[in-house]
Amino acid sequence: MSSSSGEPLAVVAVHGVGYRDARATTEQVRVGHIQSWTRHLAVGMGIEAARLALDFAYYAPLLHSGRAVQGLQDTDEFQDPLALKLMAAWLAEIGAPRPVAQGAMTMPLRYAASWVAEKFSLDGRLTELFIRVFFREVAIYLAHVDSSARAAVREEVAARIARHRPRVVLAHSLGTVVAYEALHAHPELQVELLVTMGSPLALPHGVFDRLIPAPTGAPPARLGERPASVARWVNIADPGDPVAIPPRLARAFTGISDDLTEPIHPAFGFHHAKNYLSCKATAATLAPYLGLG
Image 1 (cartoon, rainbow, N blue to C red):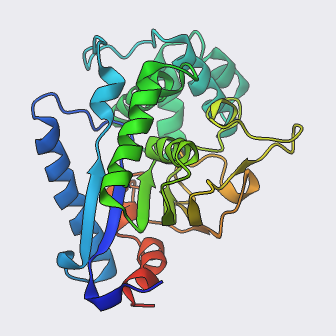
Image 2: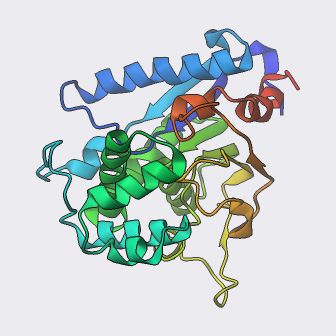
């Protein structure tokens, strides 16, 4: 398991929502995030950045290809019915009162965001922005099992893994869904370790029921499973992360080696990728692959 001959640990990172940057080229964005994710990982592990050879699967532009992007002030409602359905399922799962959860299909987004912000002690404006971006992008990805956007995103991640040949794949938020599907679709991509962070994979009536391949078994005992190309799967979730719902991913998927629940930030950063990358659970999970454990 440990790194041989002091070689850097090869890692492919798969990002979550909100990474689209139309002001820079795809390669400029990739390079910037390679540096950022490497830095956060190295700091968390207490190692030199040179010990890591990280590549970044940047798929965000593929979700928005050919789509008009609404302005930042357009927050009153979703135009996408699936985004509304996903938000309603999420609100119900995190315990929103019935009027809020059921009304998610018709009420302005700001009311749902206000309830979430109060429950999790978050900034209302930032919560509204996050909900709008998160469910809009998740809905684009999950819209159809055979959509061109979904296939393109999945293949971009698979291609990056094929080129870089990593021992470890680190996926965050929506990226955990993409990585899960990409690795299932390409069993030839042998990966020693998949780490999912802040994952919504198990969200019932939302993400879970739309996965490819579909979970198997009879409800309510339907289960997803670890991709055959993955030797070990570790899931990490902050107990206060409102996206990693429901907690304990191993209840919904077979083959998870460790299902770790650990606070990753003392204040409000419990879904930020940088905090997952630098947390103790991530460091402990990766340490043996660098000969540190």
